[in-house]
Length: 249
Image (cartoon, rainbow, N blue to C red; front, side):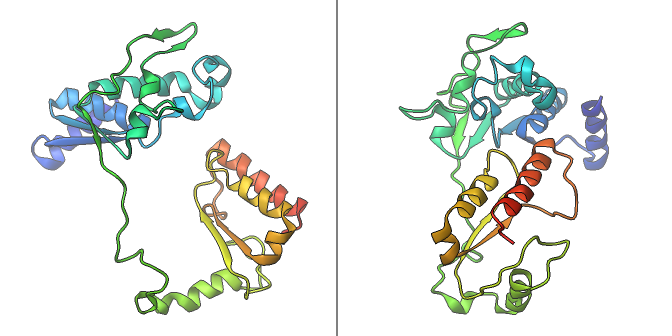
């Protein structure tokens, strides 16, 4: 029903059919597939991440994990979208067909089984010409070598220094950096278990020599807002535990 409503709204807003519909991630791609079929327009699929290879044996053990991860719905949506779409954009060849040592994210959908639900024997052709590789890049006006000091946004320096070296712990940040002379080991990502930010914090906490040499700065989201994602909540709880265990404050 969501797709039906969206199709109507799109036509009313644009006063015509769109030329192209782009889907991203599992939920976005299944909606894009249904919309493209209903409106009879070209569809592009961008997976962002295919979970089948990220969680070992997630297909075989789907029943145990389904209440938490909904793999049965996700794998079905991914399989439907990648076959229904007109073309697929990926970042690398490895994402499609892997390497001699690893299976590709798309390649893993060639054959797999969800016991008691269904079995896939010819899910996708990893060498289908619908696959297109568009390597990720960076805006060179924003990312540049550290030697090019004149290009630095110096008017932000005082604000950044306040964020990093404020002696007062507040709702924005946990812990304080007491020695500003140390170089910074910086990481930024969503607090997802796969990103393993807590693994980095644990490694840093255990390594006395590293703690002596550098400050660790982790940007993992807005701690003022509680995440609705159960995995992120668990990682945040683990992060707090590591700070206490290794006395990182």
